[in-house]
Image 1 (cartoon, one colour):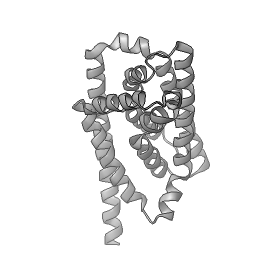
Image 2 (cartoon, rainbow, N blue to C red):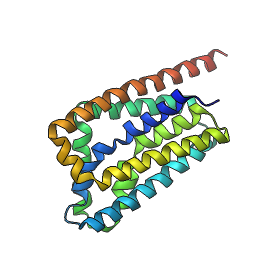
Image 3 (cartoon, rainbow, N blue to C red):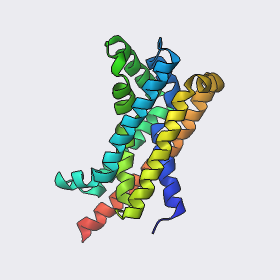
Length: 213
């Protein structure tokens, strides 16, 4: 049975992991020199591709793990540790530096036309953290059709917010400023750290019960 708290937790986890406000200045750096229509086109294409990637992991991620012989509890621990690493980067401003380096490589590697695919969609939006969070949430809430439909709706809502953030990236960056971005990123990082610790704790407890059985 679905609970509002579980759905809210799933939505918050996705939003904190993807970090739409944090993507805004990176997107501006990636699309520097583009016209506004070109920038909007890249944002739309990148968001759609990221949605498809995350949707695939949402629907078949657990099955892939089973095929590889990886238990969901082990993946929960690994995913939680990865999310904690991302939260550490956010709190100590390491993630922004890494993303800025990524954007510099993208601009100088002569594939600006394809930046909607990489690094925007498959790295910045649908990055390792978002993929891990998607698989973890899917396994945690169950595989019932109603649950999957609810998670798909949550993922779509998260992508809509990402797209909106990219559309108004220039305004977000101007409104937040350097201080606002720092405060927001650190607050989101702290929240993600708490969520990741919960993922790890749940996974360790489940693994311990399995070993004792």
